[in-house]
Image (cartoon, rainbow over all chains, first blue to last red; front, top):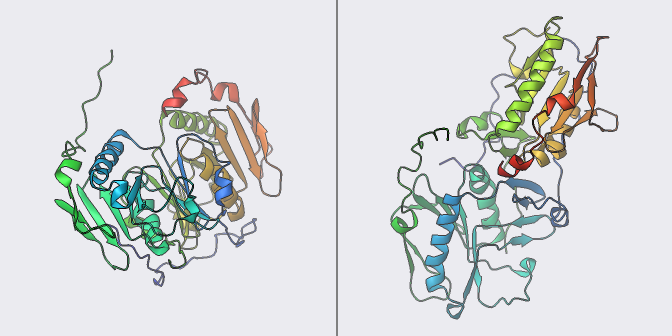
Length: 221
Length: 190
């Protein structure tokens, strides 16, 4: 996996030289990245892409592919089997983790305590139990490097990063410095439950072995 | 309750540890922008623009047109325009980060890049000193031309461009550029 901390104090070996000739352009204006609010997101196109914000910074990722949805569906079923509302939890595939006006993330699966009702608002919620992200090629860097730390900083108790290439789940618990990488049996004790919830990853990743083998080209009709 | 959020900021050196997986990884002041590999429409439009620019610029020898290039500023800004035109006074072994004059940067929208291109990258190019930016929209069959200090203008018939220090004008017919794009259905598959 990629290290999570960007090195900030690196010594730069090749310091910038002045341009070859004096540039005719005005240089050195500070660059800025536009900052958006959750209200702005409502004006973005409804085009199947996922638009999220972390402290105003826009993360834009394509809609999910079939492999991604298979894994989400399998995990949902595994979780939902044991996490009925009676057990004190709710599980969403289209939930939002929202905080203030500048942060809204949409995990692939979100588990919240059962005391919320259909009249609750996303930005009322503060005690998220679990956020799951199934890594995709274009969303991978955002999930691992930006959203995962943001979930934990906001107080999400646990984050799972599901890697369908490595066939593993990285489990990040609130307060832990490093993740636990699980490849066989994923165990999770939701708050208030007296036993572990057990997920067999062989079932979750069924048919994903050798997924990266290129498929043969389609001959012309 | 959680801690304040911080967005990771990266340096150009950090980009080396991102996977070589076809995604485009760029940085603006350390902020990461990831866009998926483009589709065929995108590549065809770039090819046609490159041909038009090449036919116009190559005989004079005053500029290079590059398809895979980098615009870098400091250690935290690294952008990869779809096409870039730089004056040929730069030696061919000049590292990208020593290039300080850019005549034209072109971005062709794909569904994945439109917001980043229009809202973030175009403005950054101009601030860095790129003389002109074209934002090519294959769906709308238009090109938005941006120049520093000028209102953006949208061209839908003929795009005209005069390179710096030149009196010759290039004109590109958008009908030509977007020919055979009439069947819009394929955009839905993109």
